[in-house]
Length: 428
Image (cartoon, rainbow, N blue to C red; front, side):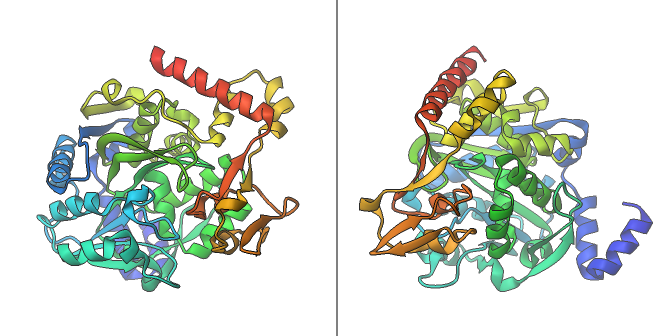
């Protein structure tokens, strides 16, 4: 980092915050530096259940395969662990949040290097204690680590010079840490197709901004650019993914559970996401966040430049993994140029309320950035003229009462896309 830029950022951010940014850059893990040279390493280790002893050994092995914790954490470092705790709160058996037993194994391993470990995510603070519902409150007390709701620590404005965003507010707690450990859950996503290491960092910005961005950047490619902008400003030093029980179909909250029995680890979150995409039968570069991060030099998305250690990728591949409705667009992007123009309108996905399953909890109404949802007679109703198809309501529903709706042609193309992806995966 040049002296002039350093001085300017000192003036903008303040000396203490800037010291942390500069120090973190200078201590950037080897594999993140290698991203500029287009190389990365991802480990895959099998573990079949949420048994603490088995997970601890699997995580330890996976981290050692990519160089060990000593490459990431100095003794006594301030460590922040970013979990996936998607609101509204849910118990771990629903497969929506990073499993607390998985997180416990990671935390106990981290504590062999540092006692200064903080766990957190930005979650709604009204109503019941979400961390207790998920089991994180009890687990963190048992392990003896600090558990925080990121909004309690406030947010700081940081420059990111992104595609859409010039500046972004990020968690002060995360930015104050010497090391960020990223613990995403392997899930599908109704807008981005997959959610993994890159998207998990979205939870480090204020919830109001998250809702606003969903409303302003409705297209998957635009929203993924925003995710990439944010990731460029707060890259984790180590990502360890909970892929023991994944979510397929219409994730990230209403899909079906699928036991994959794997733990993945890398110092390059982009490379890890690329490996996961291939594992579930997708082309990594079809996932916008992976492609954009690769293009910007924020990580490695090209499988040819990723070394997979531990289990062989083809041995853990799941060619029949069910992708969300949004994955239809991956197939259309590879179709002849005239076809997308003819069928794009037919392929648009809209949320539909299943009245018999709706409890009138109003979570969808609260999260809708367009104000398109109202609740009457204990049933949600969506105003189609206001709906922007961001699918936030689907993401927030815990009762499978809001589902993506396709046209008949959209369903046909979706099934064709699944068939093509299976053929591609088998040939690979």
